[in-house]
Length: 239
Length: 302
Image 1 (tube, chains in turn red, purple):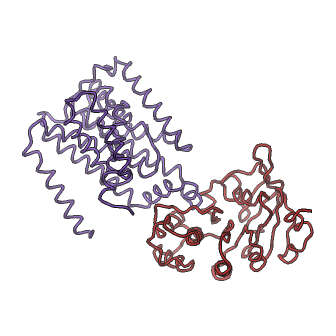
Image 2 (cartoon, one colour):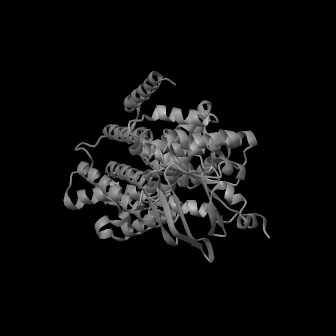
Image 3 (cartoon, chains in turn blue, red):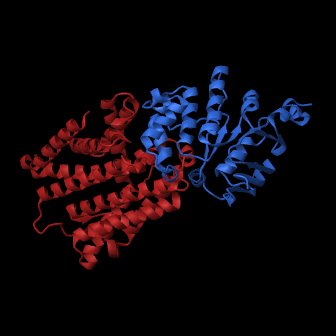
């Protein structure tokens, strides 16, 4: 039984099918990349899993339990955390308080951890220790992205869904972030579902890649196989 | 500021307030009692508006629910006014809970509109059901004590304000308060982090409505006359202005705003209707120069 599984997911917005009968699964401990051109339905897929809206048809299972109709906070409490493509920190709260919100609402998962030291640990892990008491609105974009990740981690998730965390970063920052993401899997045992436009990064870190195009699943496979597939090249570059 | 300094300041303020009635005539004492009552209303409205970002126009209406519940129980059924106020507080809380469950799912402008509607409906019903409420004539209610004493009312109102502030303080510095702020900052992000946004809002709304009910009940049994003026939009906007001018979203701001505006109102009472103009001017100037209210003046920019 896969850790997370979507069966025949479709989502319609008015007359447009943003997702059409997409099947996917995540095994525990995998890093799965989700790629595709703009408008392919990647964020729609994330939003369906995270409970931001209900898919029009299809079902989603977490550890074999149907979670399709659940609310965002239920999904989070079950152990699926997400970051937003456009970062959404709590601007008028400090980094520490941002993490505290995540922590206090997911207490049940944090068996035996006390929040002060785990907040410290997470901020250190993403490199925000010095900004602990800074209001989130005063952070740089890079720092806000780190906070977005830190906050998702503070919910003690089993699955972490990352929505384009590398966008807008330079090469050096991308490498840093890559190590961080690999560390999450290798050291903390997280399963990672990852939307990304920076192909080089996906190539290096993902175990498996799912390609969406115009709402349907184009293909799925090893990163190396995906990039040389003619259908994928055509979807990205046109005829 | 260290905790010790803080407690000293609180003690000093409490001392000054505790001794105030000794040197004041009846009129000034009356103004102070009204100030304290508005402070309860403004502070509790701030709990919803300032801390969860939901603008309700039914706060005065909930004060009316509290006042009329207690008043009618006393007049028609002979209840002790103290017990009446407790029941009124509970009924206002329940009303807040029900309205909250109905419309806080949508939030934002929908809550504002629904509460505006509720407040108007309540006002009309109270005015027209004169057989039970005595309409605009007002409901004459008994006092809280056998020998009427303004000084005693001052202490009762002061105690009620302190209890209100203690409850609010306790909430906003708890995990619940943290969730309030998260929801106000970004409710989508809050939900994604496990915050039950609707429950957080309903809870804030219920507590806030109950406190308004308590203030309304105390006010009615102080004036000895409960009129549809209590649940009116005039009152609602006055409370709103006090909160905004004092400092919405700050702990002590609404209390300062309540005292300022109410005392100001006494000074400019002579100008009749023009005092509304002065209020508007003050609000405008505050919004332009001190968007965080009087409290913002002292805190400086963060």
